[in-house]
Length: 577
Image 1 (spheres, rainbow, N blue to C red):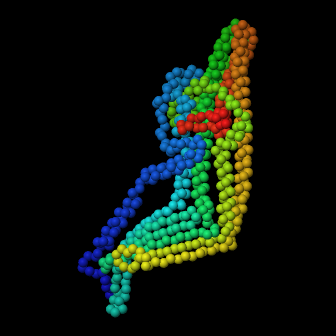
Image 2: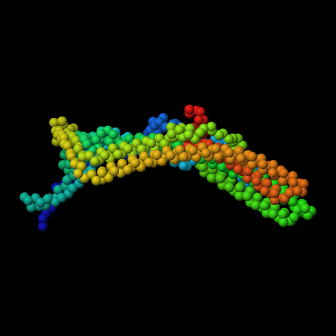
Image 3: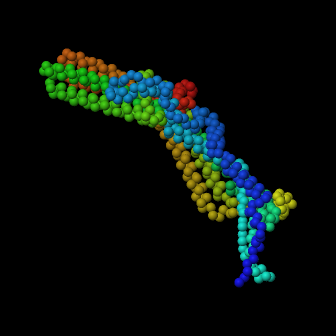
């Protein structure tokens, strides 16, 4: 049996894996690694990101008319509305539900728009989409800057093996302990000519702990430059991704600005809709109370035999129908009010009512402008039309990009390296130990089916984009013409509704007088009362419809300007001329 002899068999303790200078290097490595890993908190990254995104948005804001100059992603806690006036008068026409509105905050139209721009969930999502688009641009710009990187590692190796000693015939156990470390830094730089520069500085350390030898080191500095000469070469080709990212942020700003206009019009429309529903409750209640009086009078007449019982019963049926309509109107009002809370981004538990004086102060302001003038203005001011026109240019650029893909690949590569001399201790690269290489790589365009298909697809995409642009312009003209006709119609409907209210009031008074004189039929009075309620509702509806249609018309023309707090400003046509 062979004898085993261990070369590490000693009476003194074995050396520790990391001792002396190696311990210092190990501790330094751990300290540096910990610093880099924990030095930048998540809050630091968040603040840095917000600052860069805000800077990019502010940079392009002057390019978009009416863009919010004070854009930020700050999300406030929903207000408790403590500064708003409170509702302290019981509305009898709301019945038992009117008690729930006592003490509610009264929200004006101006305040409603302001609250919506602060808390509406969809509005906040639109702001976040714009923010994320700015982050895409920040990354695209970053790709064309020197991107630095670095790292290091350290390891301890303990290797034991059996080796045969041919002289003594005894197997010896050898044990080798080493500490290895390497580190490197460098950067990668994508140039706007399509070229790329890559550099790297690396250094390696090794120490044999078993025999307590010194450090063996080596270091090297290398750099490589690659430049396409045919496919992928050229400024416009190389920065296409950056160009598109720059334009995409501009489109996002236009979309957000357009959204703010549409959002404000929607909030105004919903606000007036709630008031209209409440006004219908009031009208239904007045009609119901009037019916009750009529029924009580007819009951007295029926007791004296002046009114047939069948006619009285029909009146009672109409009274029940009127009461049912009143109850239904209350429910519709409450539903629209609660839905409007969601539009404002408020909790359903928030107690609010809308300011009824906003409806009382509403007037008809009909614009003096022709449809052709409106279309001409929209062609110059519509932001979404600018975006459609610019996207057509984007598709046209992609034809040039696709055509570039059909060329051959011809790349120039130049690389160099400087390394250190062998030795102990830290060694820097020595210029006497250098090398460099220059080469040209050619890939003939033999197989370009994918690129050929991409080029043909780009041509088709351009034809489609042209048709979409033409369709968009035609649709925009159609919408404006229809909006102008709608305004004319709403104005006439309001004029008709005012005449109908006056006629209905006269007819109701006439029927009341007839019944007092014992003439006419009670059902005629019912019809007159119903017509009055309907005509009053129609007048309110026509007034609100014209107001909302006017705001939508200015929006479609591109001249509805939105302020920082969401309030709107209507520019008269004379201002634009």
